[in-house]
Image (cartoon, rainbow, N blue to C red; front, side, top):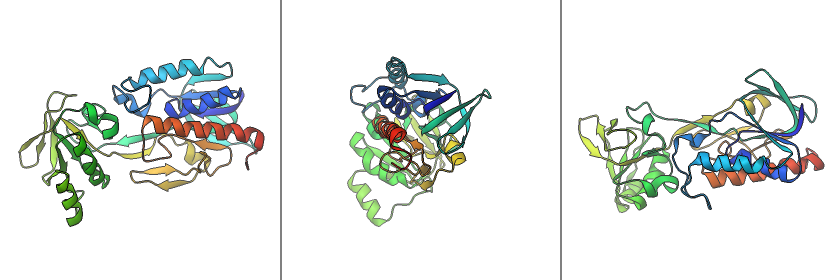
Length: 301
């Protein structure tokens, strides 16, 4: 079957894109594997009208609202390959071997987080080990820590003291210069150069961290900026251009969500390093509207 638009990814960006298309009375299919990036978080915060709700609840309500529109459909599956066929047709192959065709694609496939192999970290991810103070900082008990896994840790360490007393664990990966050290000191940040080797306490709670020299440091919440990679190979298969982001590769899009491949649009965490639910939803809106406009204005619009 050929659809007008297929949206790959059914989280905040993908559902927002599909909603615009459904409200434009266009036939749109959302293909979703059911593994959103935020599935490890118990609650979403900073999302106007949804503050404190579980992400799964927000997405469940969004799906229910989307499927009230007769031209919107949802298929639980993983899209494993994508290719262009002709001037205005794209073909997706799903993990069950079936294939689908569409005039336009919206990629809301997101990214995967890559965390350091540190004892006790993975089982706390999304709970007491988090990436964004705006999303999770208010709920964490103090004291707090920032674990370096990337140079972005210096920026995090400047932010986090507004949520509580903060220690920057450099892990031998970042070394503040004199100016950075002075600004961190002015924010009250303690800098610890001994590497963290283990997280302590009964997960998902966090009582502290153990250092390589045997000392324990009390920490109740830990921030880390994970490196990221594309969660899906589709954009690369289609020949979309990428650019280097601060934490990993990003899909290159213009201000509307158009990728470098005409007829392929994108939104969500795959297109920006500064990620949260409202921003993902907003970029999905842009991509959905741009995909709709291209259906009647042509690929060069």
